[in-house]
Length: 93
Image (cartoon, rainbow, N blue to C red; front, side):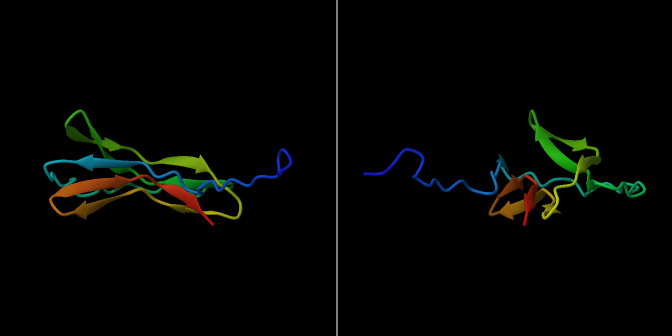
């Protein structure tokens, strides 16, 4: 018999969101962004191409609050056969 609250549930540290672009339309080259001056307590989330209603649109970079003990892994596109997959950025320790 297990007492209430004694069960452990594994929760993944990273919730992965993947967008698949078919039939394999590669994202355009990244735009050059001027990186603003550093801000204490924040991490820069660089701009990237997003897939929206059948076309790529540019999402400008922005500052996000820092998570102490973690580092930011930026989102990125991965070519997988004829398709392109977007892997959302996440905090890793």
